[in-house]
Amino acid sequence: MDTRTKADELVSINPADGSEVGRVAITTPLELDAIVARGQAAFRNSGWKELMPHKRAEVLHAIANGLLAEKEPLATLQMRDNGKPIAECRGMVDYAVGAFRYYASVCETLETDVTPRRGDYVSFTVLEPYGVVAAINPWNSPIMNDAAKVAPALAAGNAVILKPSEDAPLLAPELARIAAAAGLPDGLLQVVQGRGAEVGAALVAHKGVGMISFTGGTTTGRVIGRVAGERIVPVALELGGKSPHVVFADADLDHAVAAVAAGIFGSSGQSCVAGSRLLVEESVHDEVVARLVDRAKRIVLAAPDAKGVEMGPLASFHHRERVHAFVEGARAEGGRVLCGGSAPEGEDYGAGAYYLPTVIDGLPHDAVSCQDEAFGPVLVVLPFKNEADLVEMANGTDFGLACGIWTENFKKAWRTGRALEAGSVWINTYKQSVTSTPFGGFKDSGIGREKGIDGLRLYAQVKSMFFGLQENPLPIAK
View 1 (cartoon, one colour):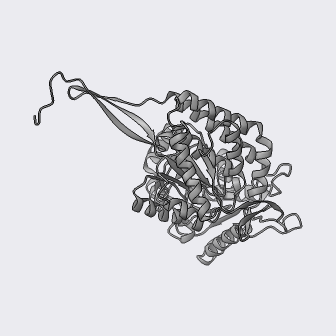
View 2 (tube, helix red, strand yellow):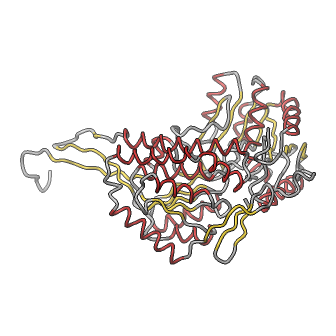
């Protein structure tokens, strides 16, 4: 989606055809103060944090039911808001439904610890919410990212202020509406709108916010991390990646090539876990690259609701400019563009932010284009000689979000998977996402883990409690 900013509103533009999709009002500083105060009041007075877990779970299930009942209109809105193919948008609504159902279950069943005794007392832990959580999300997968934060934060007993990207502002208000209709007490889920540098920055710095969860670029993540450090509030950061997709000579090349294409060209490459570096063993390099280029040229690039579409437009026209600048930078570094490298020609594409699937080789692994995130359908190819060479190249970036490994040798997969610095390792598959499995990055790819039980614990603080069992008064000293 492209967003044009009026004096007091954001205007959503469909990246497939340039038409207006909708408008939202920008949150003013005074409104932000009132929203945070409302969240604090709801946290203190609504009874949500004191509600029995199984009762909170009932509301989360009701939210899931509401999302499912509106699956098609939500998917269509997301398709128009950011250009993803409609099948992918439906899948993201399904993911959101699953996230609320999963955290309803975790909310009901999560156990805390009775710790070993070391004296005349019994000690155990309880989990308590932080209060008002600031949940700040990017534009690439709105309903999925929103659910990944909102569901566990609510399950833990918090109030949530959701800040969607200014480039995808339309889904978050729908989630808040559905949650309210499902019985979530007023003030526990609110939405603020506006530019990240203005509204987002004010939200992060607000003294009424007790915890911050951010998904987005590493540069912004560093800024948020510094603010959180100054305020001494907990922060979770899910940031960028330059994920290596590794193909050994003994891999099933049919499956590997298909997965490499899906891993970088799915979502038009606009995914933090996009497999944007292909590391392929020298002996099969030429064959794999030839197959991949052939597959890239046959990808169906079309309107998001077109029959058989495999790849839609980029999310905005200004993002297409950034992606093309990245490709031009690769050319300037000496890279060879084997396919793509430009916007497609033809009347079907003229009004949209389309970009061709692009494969580049001929660069050293320390080239800027092999280190920085393009966040588009751009793959750089690097040959490797042996496992040691592979590990050095794969780990030779500041990122560590994910990786894929293709080999028929279990021991090789195990060695490589343990050696690579990544939060998620996919072996003979790629880009699998399960709500029940923790997700997060190493190094500059982030701090903390979303999803799974860790995803609920992220939004709760541990309190240790001791019950004395001593028969005699405590002495001054032992």
